[in-house]
Picture 1 (cartoon, rainbow, N blue to C red):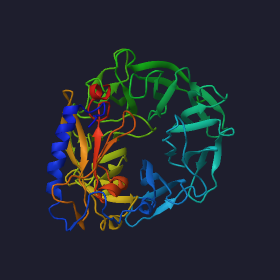
Picture 2: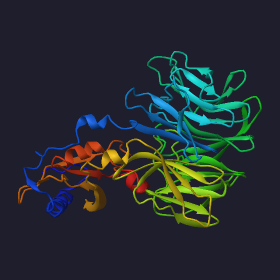
Picture 3: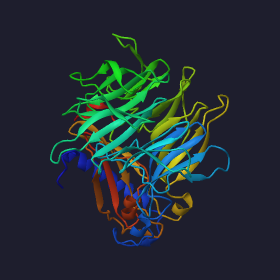
Length: 484
């Protein structure tokens, strides 16, 4: 057996012994004997395209409910929906004729922003404002035959601020910058330029400051980055730009800035793990405080805009701590019990302490969770707002829940998710072992999780085992491991 570079020969031998033991334990209750890999299964390719939607892509809370983008299973369009938090409220499609999306940095994200009087969103045609589901959209910015892209919106009373990517000359790298768009005149002005990439512009609650993140080649958004702040003016321009935090040359990643009254929150990995910090905006020291020091990741690579590993409303801080939802209130940190869900993204919170997140689990398709933290003396109330695939559709399927295993590879601890073959109608021949599909996630800074993936179940229900490896360079195990 030839070992992949991310698993040593000794690691492979350990895995083989584990697989042999796990397979014989898992197959004792099966009924019909047949060769591994030959079993018939109800999980067929046509099942992949079924469900309520293909994926839930983005999410933003509004004070009275939640907005989200989901990809249609039939048309592939990115559809924008809203649902009130009131009991028995149904979902409403906000922009029926539009596919709400963008391709800034190619991966997009941050395609819409709910405001008190409207929703701002981007499409391949530009930027639009819409005051109600039935209202006609008003175009604020044109894509200029798809040469201009817009993402990651924030707003003052008079202007929209966003990342703008300009593809003006064929064969030349696009120009990235931050711009303002006047909501009345539609005039655009460049707010920040010169860096290779920008992300996370955020207007302060009083509308007087703008903070953002930027970085340059050869760094990626999870490498050396910096956080900048400037004074906002009524005409959509800025002045007095200062660097709040700079990881350049220090091997520190700063990202996901947000406002906490007159302070900032942001994530950095100076401790070897992404943690959430409170940062004083008074220079020159810009003192910082780790709000929950932990040797677990509260963060992940910024592949897409507006994907938040934490959310705060000033009184309550909610965090995705290595696959567990936790919240900090009145100086105490508590875990939100979500035993069926292990993967979370796009955290958002209202002033009324209603938390929303996109979640998934070993037997749960991607969904939107609403978590009511409004009553401090009661346990959180968890409600599923929307799911990509109903639980009832999964109950009849043979779902193999993975086991996390750890082993040494060249002296480095490595982990993987191991899926045993599972089919209620079959068992393998005595003494036989199944073929094993060895998977390595994309990235390289991706992560293998235990979230439900019917493509893996397609194979496990036919008598294959699956080993999904978090090889050296994966996210979720600290900066040192990610940089291997």
